[in-house]
Image (cartoon, rainbow, N blue to C red; front, top):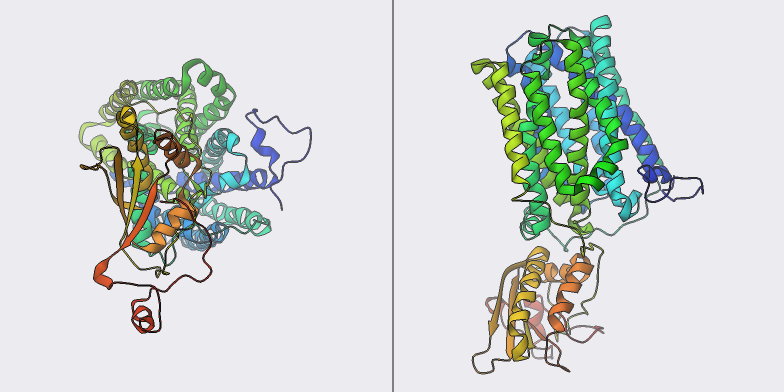
Length: 567
């Protein structure tokens, strides 16, 4: 099964439906829809089995589903960056199939206690945590980069269409036949995604990690990239400012259905379905909304609409009115999340994409996992109305903050791999673990360009740190003021080679070129690589020094190619 685009009658590249022209994307989208419907059916079944208990216990279903992301998102991101992402996804599907089967058997045997239900829900959440970063990271392999925004919106449509169908069907099935059948459907739904993944002829891809990179090192590399990428940090901040307030709806809606509106499981499913219908309808109007309000205006409007929905639910006691009010909630939810997801996808290069998305999933799911029991406890202590109004107020604060902390534009951001550094011309061959490595780059800068040069080097500094530098500094020679020296430290030689060949992007190259245009005409940077002297001094190999060099693990190069300035 190929992801090639072919038929001429497919939607144009700017259409909201353009990603469906890619066959693998289309097949996975359909299989994911079935699986998401199963997940929502199970959520309704699990929450409804606990409605007779206190509010905090009901909200723990969401916590059990989301908490594994807090614990496993970052390791899952490392796995998705280090190993074949299709293999990771298949492992997650079969693991969740096994857990769902156990849940089904226990439900039919009437042995499903609240503790077992929450425990197995937690294990399903572990499978979701394992799957999440890899699933997000393969999207650029399925569609063109310019279609990532549409792909993200279609992913949100998928989830919300499932939310429109799954809860309604799940509530009806629970009422008619019991929770066991919704668990059984969910178990079977994982087979569709697994089948599509096994049929996908994914081209071989290079694992873009440093040689011998360990788990903790890879985790640190992902954290370092996110910290020194201002655009990525801003996406995460906007997520933090929206999700806790938004989680109030998902956490408290079962209680709104049962306590405020006097509905059964079918009525609860209808309420969730209304949110889904609003989201699917929103997919048709969101392009116009974004054109009218812009990205940041849409974020603010989405938070305001969601806040209004919570405020109305705090006071309304008429079921049909609650259904109508929940329709715009779906539109607001898909509007905010599609913008945040697309913004992150366009900012992350391939070598760290899964880890960056894992951090996003950690913030997104972790915010829901941590907020859900707090909303439940607040509802038990101060009442459902107070809890819903508190969530509304939190969302309004987030909406106001868009003016202070907007999303940065993506103009000039190009995460395409750029292998523009030549091979370092060393006289010996370092071992992969040799380090730390001190890289020094000397520049000659015209006096009139000094201020502009140091300003450009701020961007270069973040680039070096994102791709592996532990420390960075820029110095001006006291004896030769035109000479500026950039020093940065990398943990090992393999980390530095990863900078050379698998971490730099077209954006990093552009930052370097801007700085180098300010150098004295006809000069080029002079680069040196220095190694930790505590490991023993190294000289080119001769008969007399061969044994000593062999012991150190550093050897002269054999037919090494490439010369010229390099960092």
